Image 1 (cartoon, rainbow, N blue to C red):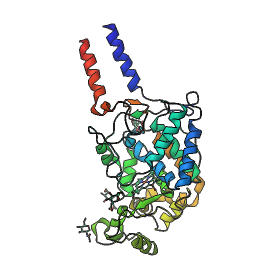
Image 2: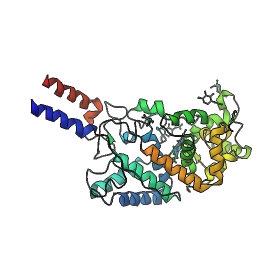
Image 3: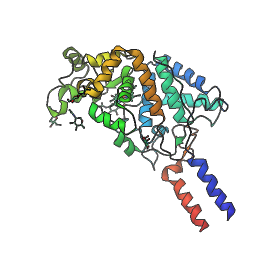
Image 4: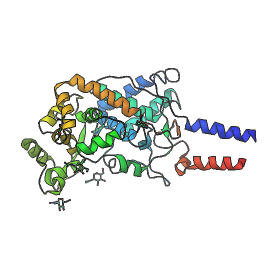
Length: 339
Ligand code: HEM
Ligand SMILES: *[C@@H]1O[C@H](CO)[C@@H](O)[C@H](O)[C@H]1NC(C)=O
Ligand SMILES: *[C@@H]1O[C@H](CO)[C@@H](O)[C@H](O)[C@H]1NC(C)=O
Ligand SMILES: *[C@@H]1O[C@H](CO)[C@@H](O)[C@H](O)[C@H]1NC(C)=O
Ligand SMILES: *[C@@H]1O[C@H](CO)[C@@H](O)[C@H](O)[C@H]1NC(C)=O
Ligand SMILES: *[C@@H]1O[C@H](CO)[C@@H](O)[C@H](O)[C@H]1NC(C)=O
């Protein structure tokens, strides 16, 4: 009897302990972790500059869906529809292979120690520094989820049609302020978006049959040439005028009506609460950098409190049966054995 109780107790703490995040979490267990991540990120960017943007974006799409737990890295299984094919992620998220490469390098150095969720956080920080942006200390110690949910991703991740007012509300549900929203949108200082994401605003904004009137006319002509109405919607355009450099050009572009996404441009054109910060950041890059760092750290603190583990392979749970809620079921079985 007492032995069974002990099993239940151990089981409970080994999989549900909420992680206390802190800097230097791997100082003893994997002292080279942060330099290994930086190294692989550097090599990835030498191959393709855009991989910095693509990796950084993973932090947003991970942390907003049940906390920063690498759920978005799980491949679908017969029992689980994961997040890779969700509305915002399909044909859009990329550079998963860079995460795999980082994981492999870490597993070679200190197997089973560094979580995939922490890899996303470190890789995103490094993407920013290596693109000319600010440096900061990351808190670590996250666990990887046992499962993922396409539905949760669909319900949470904002569409490119979203406007500033909607985004203020969405971010406030994550305790992220208006300043956080505007600063974090500044991540679009690097990277690219597809014609798919802007066709509606070029040709039929809000069902009017007309383009979005807030687009600066010369810029609109350029976008029209890039994205003709019946063209290939996978063609990509730059999210700001300096897509490889992490700087405040994005905000200068918004002030000039040259935002790529509707969600970007409305931060200046629609809502005076967000406009204030856009104008401020367009004039003061240091202010943008420090607000961005603050936002990334806050976003990185989001946690679900659900059971977690350190995955051996970022694409699959260590015990894929977890995807079928085995964990809970076993626990109920154990408990009912006791009665
Ligand atoms: C505020 C709400 C946001 C919306 C509506 C949004 C939406 C989008 C969309 C539609 C794209 C282009 C996807 C495509 O066309 O395939 C994109 C790209 C990107 N997003 Fe966001 N995003 C938001 C916030 C963020 C945040 C908070 C981050 C990171 C901190 C981020 C990082 C990125 C990056 C780096 C890219 C370029 C990725 C690449 O080149 O592969 N975004 N975003
Ligand atoms: C902003 O988006 C919300 C939600 O989609 C919508 O109800 C609202 O009408 C939009 N505001 C403007 C001015 O377009
Ligand atoms: C936001 O903050 C409140 C109060 O501190 C807290 O109860 C809630 O869990 C937080 N929400 C998120 C998503 O972190
Ligand atoms: C524009 O959008 C509206 C509403 O979604 C739709 O009814 C209309 O057919 C669209 N017009 C064109 C030209 O696509
Ligand atoms: C974009 O490319 C993907 C494959 O990378 C393809 O499955 C999809 O159909 C394409 N989408 C469009 C709109 O052309
Ligand atoms: C924003 O606009 C509203 C009405 O459109 C106005 O009442 C408010 O004072 C403005 N706030 C700022 C900060 O300009």
